[in-house]
Length: 340
Image (cartoon, rainbow, N blue to C red; front, side, top):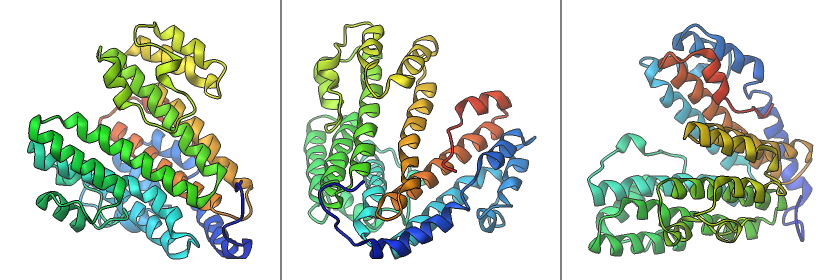
């Protein structure tokens, strides 16, 4: 699944892939997920995790509401471990950069809008130390940040001098993040990774189109909100004035045909993107699973990161459902597929 040329020899990846294959055996399988869903309470759901590698964190939890701490610790452990043995550090960095952009969003909104939300910050997982981001925002000096991030942060600071617009923080930083990601992808030279992020951009853009249409925003706003690098050019594919059936029809010949009708029709009925997001995640996971058949290369490492992040999302869905005493069937409807 590597394009062009082999950037690293198979030998250099043999050890890393061996490590990842061993780690894969400890991912939660469908039966454990189902036991969590069927558990009578949030406490009982957590007990199921006591039989897994999450067990080491359970003793440190103050209460069931503290489960996020456990998930953060596991995410940190996985990224740290992969950083240690990945032959290409930039591979792990490719996935870690989203945490840097997330943190910068939180910090900029805190500074510009007074929305101080320190609990939203992701610690010790990104490529950039949190202290560096905090200092950059406090001093409004972004020179030490990666170029795409720096340019976006400077644009945001400039724009906020004229008008406080929190949407701009998300729009500009999301665009900068994907510019950085696709720049990194050129160096990694993996068609598997490029395809994954291309599909991800398409699915984000479809959601963006749906949201912009619902809020009656302008075409100009849509163009600003759409991300580059997708296969589908939403501005050419469909107009904001078109009924959603047109969007479905235009996408029925695409790779997204298998779920697009279900996802958008459910959205029309419920006015929520919950099902669309689930189907989109499952579509992406199906692509991720192709790495199971790759013997050497970055693909199994990338797949493990995505599998673990998916697992954490699934645990979070279950715990939120259990804490809020949602019916079991409702929780099941929201669940994503699992990697193993």
